[in-house]
Amino acid sequence: MMKKIIFSVLTAVIMFAASVSHASPYMERTVKFGETLYSILGGIFDSAQVAEIVKEIKSQLPDFTLKAGATLLTDENSVLFKLSLDKELLIEKDGDGFRVEAVKYPVETVTAYVTGNIESSLYGAITSAGEDFSLAMKLAEIFEWEIDFFKGIRTGDSFTLLVDKRFIKGEFAGYGKVHAADFFNNGRHIRALYYENGKTRGYFTPEGDSLRKGFLKAPLKFSRISSTFSYKRLHPVLNKVRPHLGVDYAAPVGTPIHATADGYISKKGYGKYNGNFIGIRHTNDYHTLFLHMSRFAKGMGIGKYVRQGEVIGYVGSTGISTGPHLDYRIRKGSTYINPLTFKAPASKLPKVEVAEFQDATKYYASRLDEVLVKTAYASKTVPTM
Image (cartoon, rainbow, N blue to C red; front, side, top):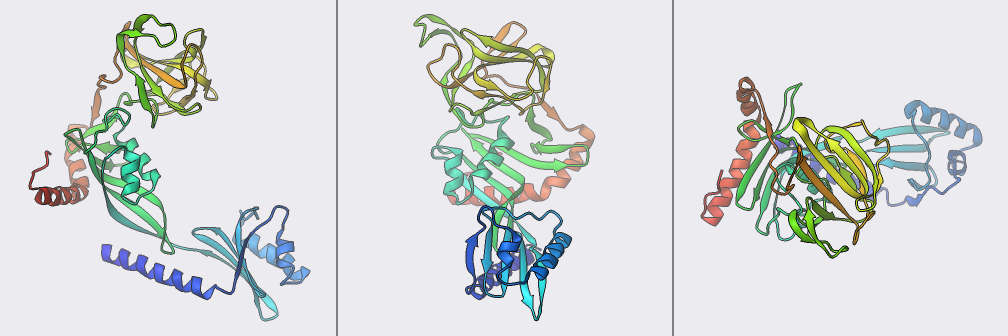
């Protein structure tokens, strides 16, 4: 099956190259602001034909709209609109008449290995592997409950994943599902296997433990820690030693802030010291607090229920602050907890479902194991499972 897919992709590449060569007489340009189908087609077809062509276009593509900036190829007998990577619209002379053809190109999918070694950041490792930044985001979202990508990444960490890659006419068109992934972080091996059965969906360890925890490791996707949890910290503005019961994440103004767990907004307002802030009440008497926001996300208000990962506001430097950052805090009851050492409880698959899960994911697990064996053979070491 994989050979057939790869063959199809190579065939598409060859056909696309041939079509480009054949299309060389065309003149390529973009649609200008104020242009219409009538003005574009008027040089090739008479007004009556253009009116019929417009009707035919609407028949084949009901949602078609001509947008400024769209690419088109023209010659003396035809116009080719490149609507998207997978869709084109050809209008050409056909004897004394015309022909309108909307072409939808198939999407070829190949499941591929991607491996990388961390030297400075996950983003750098992904791009060094020849992949797009969006794959770094996918990987970070899978492991964000297990790994703090601001503080926990180490030089020498590595990853392997099996991901669907989409191709249209031989061109890369984005990533699909990540089926499985290994991440070696500071000597720890974390494996994620995707599983869904209609009512359950997500990434799990081989034992059936969900990688999705009650709390995210951090409220920002990418940033750096500028100040840690401490009971005695010299305040950079007040120049006094006082407790700092949270973690400061430095980030540009406007960086989205995400709720780290489901809960109800219990506080929202402005304070002299804390600037714009939001407090969220979670189950089991857990509370989170987000300080120094530039602004709140639309619709945020006391009593609103927010989901884990939902954007609640944006990084700023309001209140007493030396620069744009988020002060993030967690407490249980009245006791504050260091967010960097806090371990959120994990959920598990029901025991009766674990065997079904392991059977459903064994193919991708075995493919990751093949990489581990090759790595062990090459380095003469046995990776920790």
